Image 1 (cartoon, one colour):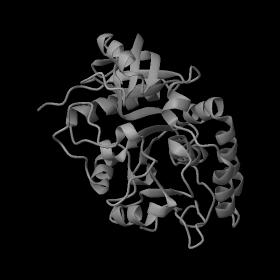
Image 2 (image 1 turned 180 degrees about the vertical axis):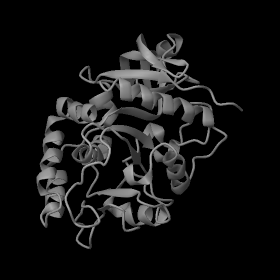
Image 3 (image 1 turned 135 degrees about the vertical axis):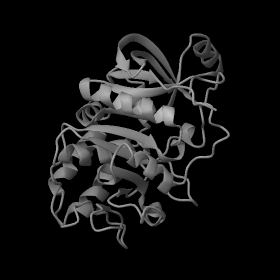
Length: 306
């Protein structure tokens, strides 16, 4: 990795370090309120990882079935047009960190976060959120699944518009919703409610309901009602993301918050192992997106031009 890359990877005894290149603790952002990225990855070409939600693996809900997922370096290059590498965290697990680091070695400043063990997608999202919050508590964050990043320009223009909405409306977590193609019970489902604003030419709607993998009968009803599938990204303020973790997963939040005390010290690897050893496992969709405590909104992504 390049010198400017944050090291968050295991040593020979699976210790994990998360310090700046000069060994200092978290450094504040030069420009508070910037846009950051969290990228959940399956861990290289040879591995699949529970870091990535199962329904996001190879799923193309916005009718891109004929377009294969981008390799991780190309996905990060695409994301880099929106968020620079120095503000991008790629999340994987200790057993797969070597593959991920090798695949991003040519990308300046991308930060690889290696988790000691699997604690579900909630930890995969919230651990880097705490890292970002320590640097830029006023920042915004876009969360992606690496294997669902597309080259479609219309989607990226819309995502850019959603990030602008999030900057002006930091109280919302804005999901990107896609038009469903079938009553699929393997997907999450979003019921849009009242319009709360605009992103580009599309509306942003409060989420009236979220269902993670509903029954087939319920999925058919949701399809008839014009509900949406959650797609490859969401955008929110990092403060809201951390607060949602506190509201929905207080035990996990407590473990992750304590890590900041040990940042940049010799005890940091031990602290992260301890945090993960006793942290609860949780699915982000079920624990957060289904929770009434989460201030969810949704913006429908445009259909790509064929």
